[in-house]
Amino acid sequence: MMDKGKFVSGIVRLLLWGLVYFSSGAARADTEYYRHVVFDNSLTSDVYFYSAGTSNGPSFLEQINWRLPVETKTFLTPPNALRLQWQSQPGGAWEAELRVVNFRNRFPEFSGRNLYFWCFAPQQIAAADLPSLVLSNSREGLQVAEFPASFTDPLPLGKVVADIPAGRWVQVRIPLSEFHTASIYEFRPQYLQNIIFRQERADGVRHILIVDEFRIDDDPSVEVDSTLPPPENVQGFGYDRHVEVRWNPLNSRSLGRYVIYRSLEGQPFEAIGMQLPGINRYSDFLGTSGVTATYKVAASDNRYRQSALSAAASASTREFNDDELLTMLQEACFRYYWEGADPSSGMTRENIPGDDRIVATGASGFGIAALVVGVERGFITRAEGIARLVKVVGFLEHARRYHGVWSHYMNGATGETMPVF
Image 1: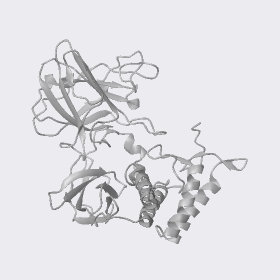
Image 2: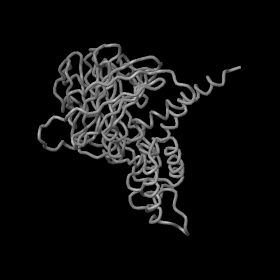
Image 3: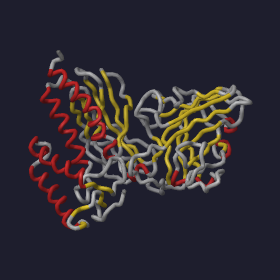
């Protein structure tokens, strides 16, 4: 018969994998971020789930189970990038498709006039040997044009990009006005769903191009060239299988991301991940107990320029008993509701990431219950819990009602109904 303690520990660890992830990174990613970013990193280290690759005839495209491989050694923002390896031959063709990640109720419009991405070539690639690029409003790439889906003519990258030098990251900037519809419907870049690399000149040579940080944005504003300071008060907290790194927030409009570095057993520090502005901690899953790691954090601005590294902080993982595991899980659950709540109303957002305007009465019921637990377990003070509850009640007092009943979805800033369905 299975030992009860081991069974409980296993269940708690399984739940924690999901909950700590949502409470640490994705849970605080806001709508504005996803109005610009098409790709920053892959959650998996082998293939990128939101991709597709095909080749035919004598042409070649590296792919794993019809998806694009992830590059874990060379990247612009840690911990990875995407790797395009191709060979264009006469009589053949290939396509590599990068899909936009869609979240339920995510504000759909991209905002910006230009497409940006970064390239790194181990060996120089002449502009004429670069692939062409197609943009599509369809999640099926080039295959359909059912309203409002449309796609563009192939744009040879060699017309807008110079030679890619060897061993150096280069940022590509393409005005979206360069893309022209090839569909029966007008192409609208704000509804972009796919970026597709295609075979262009059949030079018969094997090429590798590592790509990272795809985004839609405007030209950066002219600003004083000042360096961000490193984050302060970096601390490490060891848990059963992971370490949580925390630091003081930086209040700067030029802050683009935090970059986390780790050293194991005295080895050199290596970049292992990034975190979005507004989230001042990072969960590093080491996978086992009894491991000591040291961390430093840097601030990176909107132009990807990094600050100096912070002071170091160390922590060790250790075996937790069942009570400690349950406390860890409860705190992770509590954080989701406490930190992911709408700042204006205190209500719980419908989904994160999603549309930051939408709060839900049902989810807010769970959020209020979490306040009670948070106070009881000491995750927040009684005064903090009461202040949040007062904010929620104050919002509901003025929110729109129908015969005394609140709608399920509301605008957290105005209290007006959000007619999702």
